[in-house]
Amino acid sequence: MERKTKVTAEDGKHDILIIREFDLPLDLLFKAYAEPELVEQWMGTKVLKLESKKHGSWEFETTDAKGNVAMRASGVIHEFIPNQKIIRTFEMANTPFGVQLEITEFEKLSDDTSKINMHVIYESVAQRDQLLKLPFAYGINMAHNRMEELLKTLK
View 1 (cartoon, rainbow, N blue to C red):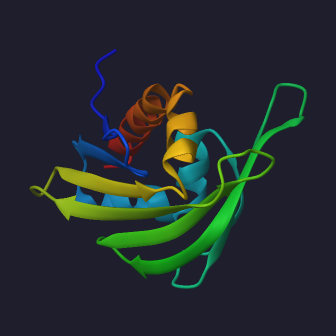
View 2: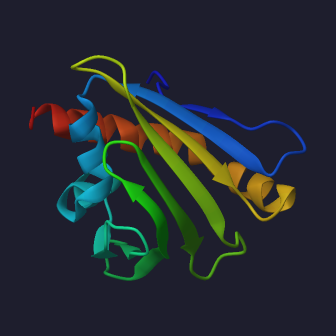
């Protein structure tokens, strides 16, 4: 599978850059991050809360086949500018990863294509490097592929 989502992590830094171009109009791409029912579908997680507004909060939960909680994450939305930018914190419960800051910018390339530029900042280089030992790049690419396929049906 081609990795269309590019993840860049420079040695010794405590951040990563994630860039992906989509064959989707800008407004549809933004909705995928702002509307709970769409987030659930492409992320494969339950949205317990998603207040898509400045100072809103969010909480997601993923369960295994037996209904046990496999992952819970939450945070606060610090900036929410439709079709332009979402800045939020992200924290996974019961993990050593700490709180990260995500700055996601949405860019129109043409009427039918758009792009996201994510800048993710971790508390330390060690936390970032620990996360990168997981199949993080593979997982985000898969999720973005699911999102693109899902949203193409809504065009």
